[in-house]
Amino acid sequence: MRETLVLNASFEPLATVTLRRAVVLVLQDKAVVEHAHPGLRVRAADVDLPLPRVIRLCRYVRVPFRRRAPWSRRGVLVRDQHRCAYCGRRATTVDHVVPRSRGGGDTWLNTVASCAEDNHRKADRTPEQAGMRLLKAPFEPTPSDALVLALGAAERDGLPEWLALPA
Image 1: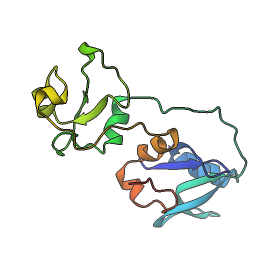
Image 2 (image 1 turned 90 degrees about the vertical axis):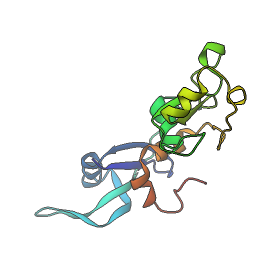
Image 3 (image 1 turned 90 degrees about the horizontal axis):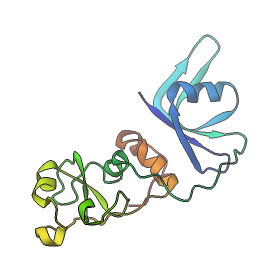
Image 4 (image 1 turned 60 degrees about the horizontal axis):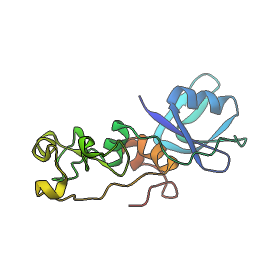
């Protein structure tokens, strides 16, 4: 199912919602379509509107300050675009740079996406001890970046350039 990005009235990302929920918000005049899927429309007897990819709320919604994006295994895989941090192949697991048995935790800066072979080869060692090099250093995404990353590669490709993530 397609996901739609919801922006606050100030254009900051708030959440992702289902396509159905996005259409309801637009029909109730609570949101406007900022970016639509090209060539796709929602049609009914009295309704003809573009299929929303990004919507913006008409009224500003005050949200509690989110200092950090919550860590999750899925979030790490999405952040690293399902690519192994050691070899670049498709990643299916999450590896701790400093193993948990040696005091490493479940944090954005200590976890990377990894293929099963490299995760097994590295085992309970640091990358230096295993003779492995990280292709890309782990980073902590902002809460807004985490929402845009959660859309998935197919949805992110068609986003307007003002909303795209820095490379």
